[in-house]
Image 1 (cartoon, rainbow, N blue to C red):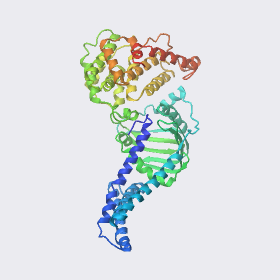
Image 2: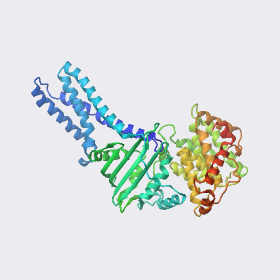
Image 3: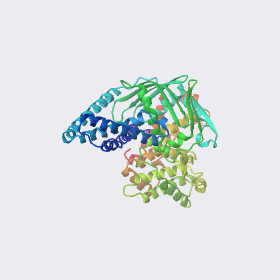
Image 4: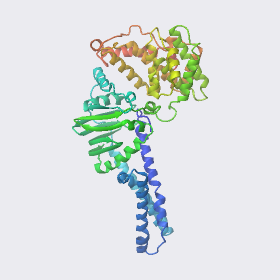
Length: 541
């Protein structure tokens, strides 16, 4: 499955479902065909129909039922969807065999008949797609997500991290419709195509309206749905009362028959299955969605797989581990002042990346270097983010070897710089920027305060990662530059004059909050300073 941030994920999911459906259809073509040939031929039409046609068709459908019943968890799982495509495959195979047995003329006539059927099906599908796609998105009342709302949402999840729950213990998380709409308004804009959605919950019934831009076009798929849903014992229960896609009103009973099979298909995905196993129940009650879950740990690379398509951007854990072991082995040469240690650690990682890079692997080598530096100089939780893969001795060696490293005299800026760089690799630049911004918004609510200087460190780290992995030419150019020397000004500009320590009221008053005039002015200044750095200027960023 493709990454969820990318609009290509929707296309990839549709393609996967279509291919799975075609495989289910095609695998039963021989069943229908061979069932006809398992019976002796008959010359007369009546005998051919009663003694060959009907028995062989019934036999093939019974075989489809038996085979699907064997692969399904009991007869209760057999429904219209599990039998529709296999049954259609049996019918088409049966039709072809019946025509073939009648002689050359009938066999030749079967081809145009089949083409006509295919044309009619394609025309019907084309009409439905045309009516389902619209030129404008739905007009939705999407809420504005303020810093205060972000902090409130964060507090709802406090203490309910599934990774930290003790074995056997479960927690409940209840979200109202306004909570869910704020989460959607916060997260959906991080996609690379326009997406928006709102929900309404009335006691035990929910409504969803959503718009998704089709990748590479200016057209949209608009969905309006209403019904009830729940999840218990690994089974999804959905009862649709209404479903509209674009200008197409879909029959709810037919669609409801497809949902369990589609849900089963999605939940069998290797990335999702471990997370589903931790969920005990999901239900609509009292105007909220209540989720009950226990301890759960996603598979290694889970977060990265949500944001990236399968293939070249997959995390190479062995390469990241090799980078970390090289950093630990090089501790004696990574010496000097705490600021100098930062530069030497970066040079060590990228020199090693240069040595490991194959003829076309500089980007991959740099990705591993950035993730290793994210764990060593950023924060140990970067390892948890991508999937724990180090032993305790290695973690202890990293902590003792690189703690106290500073950037421009600050021990927090290496964390900002390389956590942002690692997030750019794991997720994307805009996700990294949004995470850095939220950290400052959270701090403005009684913590250390909102810091534009910290945002400068975040943005510098994001840009550093983008230049290091943009393409092979840029990746190799950065390796060569770091192999020669390290000057902090080339990668992280001075933060002089950027306000820090702003509490919420002060931040709102002076800057107008996130998106205010003062805020936008300073963000533009941060972008100007980062773009002026020599390493980024040389890359043509």
